[in-house]
Length: 442
Image (cartoon, rainbow, N blue to C red):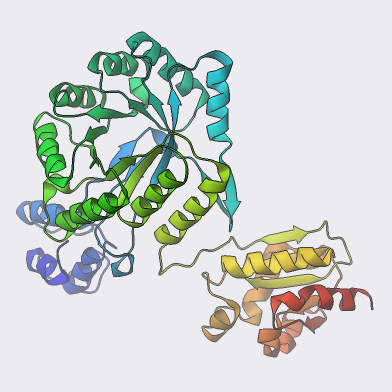
């Protein structure tokens, strides 16, 4: 990625403000931080625009599998370490469906993959794709399975075979859905690349290390396949860590375009497969295909992925809204807190422990915790009153309003703003059950 000064040198330097920024230098700084688009400047020359467009392009190509809103994007990364900016597209996890299944067995397998889903801090974890694997050796059977799976599975999928005729037949059946085709290698690269180009699909390449992958990616691009995913053929944890680190460094630090593509791993099942998936998730993998993945293996792995791909500069947030807990009624107390997800789920869990119905109002504080938001002026009595008015909670109950103990000093102004009795709550969430029992027993 270019620096702000490099961008600035290619801009008109007229400070016309037509881009919405006060100066060309300010606009260049936004470009360098990927917070503005080159098209926002109406006066940049065609020559400069061409150079700027190339400079602004991610060092790793972004590829897409599937269509519409359910498409899975991979790549697009610009940094080695998350704290340098952030990671963009999280690692996708795919589970295998073999084409030797048919009828109810096939349907059950797809349903099993679909059922691999969890909710954590307001986010849904689930399998991202299915990889349809040609184990039968029969092109017609492979095509029939691909068609049957595409009718049952509404997310993107992968066609996995090194048999060009089988791949061609399957693409004739489902090519409009833009699956990823995986199985290109030295012996079939040209023909697989031709299929990828014809159907507008991402091509998965099987290599044997970074050097082999770079050589094959150059040949695939020359054959017309632009969107690639590289399998470096990592046989173990050590090679996975080493080879994927080498590939990412070459792409980002050295701007070596033949390795500037998403990386993937094909693993089996069980603990060792999950270990490789974890290493790949932490160290630059964009796709992992499992033979199988159990619930107890998937949850910690997906939690790890969430932690890595959460923007460190943007806390996880929940929506400002009124959350009824335990079927509250017209005499139930009203509690409120910030929209920092950890705060919300902690407070909610402790309210549920009390088994006392409560109206819980979440106030948008841009993901800040209670004290931080209060200190920043984002958790004030006026803002809380606005949230109450928006949700209409005070018309639903005549119960007391409980202010978090850490911001007890806002209680007086809040009483004036809402015209309702305010009770100071606890400093720590763990004391909520006891406090609720005390105020509801009075």
